[in-house]
Image 1 (cartoon, helix red, strand yellow):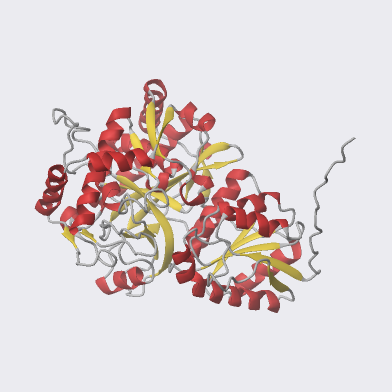
Image 2: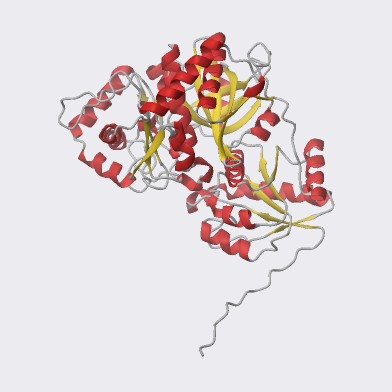
Length: 554
């Protein structure tokens, strides 16, 4: 009889009673991890002091890699190896000062038995806030218990008290008095009827969500399983980025130049230079124009009602970034695109709603929002933003806490001061995009907005909806906020009505927030109620967050 060869299972070292393990999830791109490491190291030092002052020791569960010049977990397989050698019952902090790929650590976190704390620095630089919110959304979707904290310097009494509570009990919670379940809200008959009719139309006629490869940057929270999505009437058309690349190569130079001329006639500014490695060039712009045409044609081929381009890893070594493409697609006023034979205008008089980074939660939201605002006679252009950072207005212009909502792709010029004339295009940073490509940069116009987020929790689709405003800040204050984040990207100075900074962070289950303008406060209030009714009719659990502009609850 042959002998069985049993695997050798090494014993994991046990941590001390007053020791806490720490991991740091990073980017997949070496250049990003190297550039961002100093900020992460600074954050870890501050967090270590806070833990030590509470009578505990913070122990890094994986080493600094001298050859690679950073200390991040930089892949899923590396994360699995790190967690395999850890005490599975130890208290664990995931410390984030950078954008991170959640799947690098998700496998380990889901099997970890000890208490988990996600923790980020309050900075817009790389940013840890966005990374932590994505990880929080992913853990929420997976049904994994965790606590979360954030801090500007890890020295405040509030942070120290919360940290101490987690160290002693393994859990920390935050008040959420700003949240009102839809069941406690009276939705007027007119708004309820419109929302329910739009839901019935979507379920009966159905819609196609074109997905150019799922799972951008490890964003597990951004994938809606088909069995959850399909009951809403939306079905995925799984498309390939390789097809988008090929179709881009088939678009003629003449067609690309026509799109380029359209931008020029609209008054958009392109900040160009001679060096492909450092500057935005005409070659990059024309390739982006071809990608725009290609995306429209593929969407038409499959009858898509909304599309999402993965944007980062899939195309970064083949094409310039898709930012210019995405924002253009999301604008009703955009360059005309014809079928390959030139006989048919595609999507005439309409935007083609696009969801950045194939965040399917945003895809479902943007489709609903587009249809709601079309039906209400309101501006239909909508986009997602990163919840990048926030700060009090240092210019003294407004008394509100002002968020920096910032994303490089999908922002339509209709949202910007001056529209196309107020839009400029700058090269994406080379550490993210070797082949460059221009953004659509600008400052979002002041006005009334509806914000929302579709997410997955307890095995079902949910949505948070709220009201807010966009404020106009002086140029100097805007520049300060751009320099603290990413100056090549479009910026929105957002205020969330009746929702404080910490309330928002405690409740929001994603790195992204969906925003759309309304013509006035009353229209925006009505749009919230229509969206709530539509979402509920589609089977989602709905919460209204915060208040109306006048401070009244829903």
